[in-house]
Length: 324
Image (cartoon, rainbow, N blue to C red; front, side, top):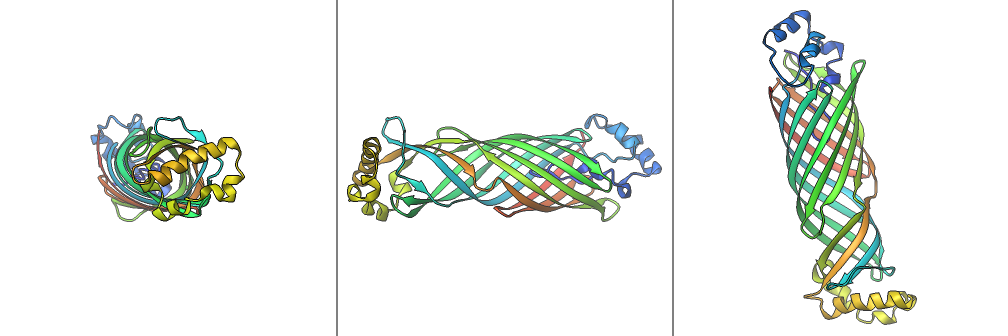
């Protein structure tokens, strides 16, 4: 029995387009055999698609996914305060190159609503570590670790181009991070162009290349303990900060803000907490993708995808499908 590849998660499903490959079209005998027992509610119009030679995948999929990702993060618009005071914009802290590394696992449920449209929901947990490089007033790197949970929704559409396929996938996720007051919102957009090959009578392999665009919410608010954000050596280097050029070059307003923050850092290092607000964005919004998928019958599929150039990632996905 011939069937479509199952390319799920960050890769949008490409099954509808693969079926347009003449090498994968059902023969008239195969169509008649499928139609005799075809009773799936989803995808809508699935039976008509079978009549035209398309072999429908089982409509409901349960995915288990693991992902590692490393990318640059840009920070700007920093504002700080202590205690219950409102944050104020600061001009005396400058960022260098910042790098974030994330490890995450999630579960995903997807449904073929139409032969060319898949919708899905996902939920999971993640841990991250970010190296924040401060170049002024003191040159140092702060290592910040976070854990969180997230949930999201997405959809995928695809078209066939002769023997190849093109898929477009978009999803939105909301991540609750321990140290942040509000969830972090993000959007992923993926474009992939590939080809599917018949390996055995019931198995298929797909390969593709593509690109992904990632967007994060602009504003982040939270609080962090001084001891978690700054090494003791940095505190010691700031003891005589009022004699430094960066401080003497500030205006009265910025000097007053600096005095408040430095009092928390120097005199309450072990117990102090800093409130912060900043804008952030990924340093390289677009990156390259390459991947492969192997489909074992109608039930199982296994997929691997790597992100290259600017944002580096490795993703592994196993999916089991049910008729619905």
